[in-house]
Image (cartoon, rainbow, N blue to C red; front, top):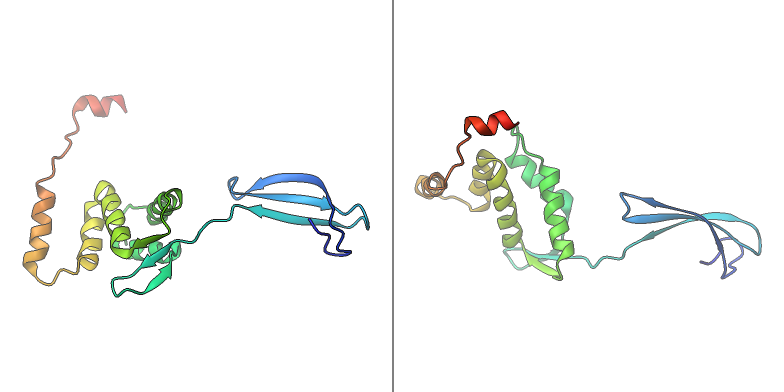
Length: 160
């Protein structure tokens, strides 16, 4: 690492610490030529994921934008919007794709909301799927009512 003061090409690492939950490393260095100490940060270089919008435009994936959309659907509901967005972001980063459609991201959100909160799922689906009339809304509700529900027995509650 080049010294910021004298531009010497060599430096000595004095201390290394993981930061940001281990996703980057903070290093304290010293220049052998001038003795100046300085800090460097090392992070993994990730390939940005492009999101293809319905109209064909492309934008970089923005977790904060995803969180805002989920928060609107989950207002006053016991749902962790940031947790859902983080799990989707992790899934995308762990895959080998560099481009994904906004429709696919919407389906990922719907799948997670369906598992944790049906009301938030309906709210998100009503905007995402752009229900035009009461019939399309009713059809979605009917498809949800056909889902098998897990009944909690007295044994389940006693074990907790």
